Length: 494
Image (cartoon, rainbow, N blue to C red):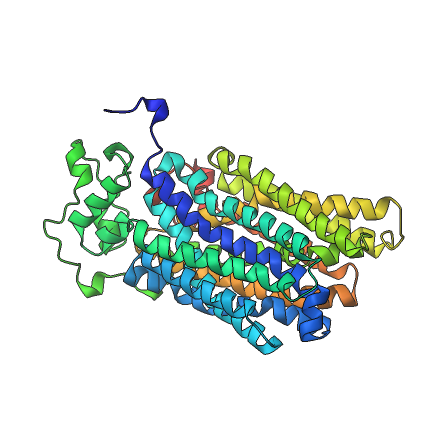
């Protein structure tokens, strides 16, 4: 007996996207706990006091290995499949979190962060690629944004776990957050391996036509929503955006190859295909804007929120921890409408207008510090900075956090989507490392320099996107990838 429409469960591609997005949750939780943990008295009692340079190195050590592994994650995802890549990355991440929870000296803790970073680099880029490949065009924006929503949920939970444990009079105060993180990551890894269906696009790319058809059926994507995916024989082999428009829905379900023999090895996607003439510009633009996403200063704020709030006048440990947790709640709350309306705002508009907003906020905070207006125990200056930190998190979460990652995946054709996305995420990790490493040192040497640096990088990115970024919202993956090197020329012609 069929259930009424209102009582039916959502299609499995929705639940698969939500499960896949849990990788964003564990990433967000790790991001939010490392800053508070490293300023806990219990942590310092175990490992000793350290300089701002060592503090930055502890926090950023995860990012060096993440950047390295992310450069090869696309090749792994193309070779073994999207779901196996996600599962492998989650398992390695869990091992790193467990090592940190059990650390008996600082070197072991940093080693655990390095292992964790390898896992992050492997699975994070594959998350967006997988969801992008299974989601129908009309729902791709919200579903591809769901890892970001789960990231903000992880941020929120991580801050409040640390806030609740900060009073424990033992090393459990800082060990438990990592133990919880390890348990969640192991669960994510095993669930992804045994439950997530493989991407039908990846199966088609490897000549597994019948398995791809079964995967579409398992994901409950109807033939009308398959977006001409399995008929893109030209894109899968030579890279041309061949768009076939069969009138027969059965043909939409079965790719044209008559055998399930894998394509010849020379036609399989390679790492350097991301720099082929037809996609080189989009690959370089994706690498640039993903790197600049970090140079906006977002992770400087997320990693060092307690420190920033202390510098703005919230001097007590509990007040700065609580303010950090409240900022995570705000980020989570505004990400929900950002996810719902992501297909209404557009990728290009959200990046340009959002970039203008966050650059102005950075310039405002830098100007207040430069004008010596935030060093009093009271006064309007410090409250403007505190409110500006919240506003920065809000504007970033509804614009750059959502639009950039979706654009990078949407702008590439099938054969280069995984490799180009992994390169862009590698750029993101490298810049993330630089931000996490240098933010404490910049703040120690100048109260305002970091704000002007981040604001300037953001504004420069807005200029680049205004002239060269094209809109991909609402298009099929192949239409979004078909724009040539002159995005600005295309828009002018329209």
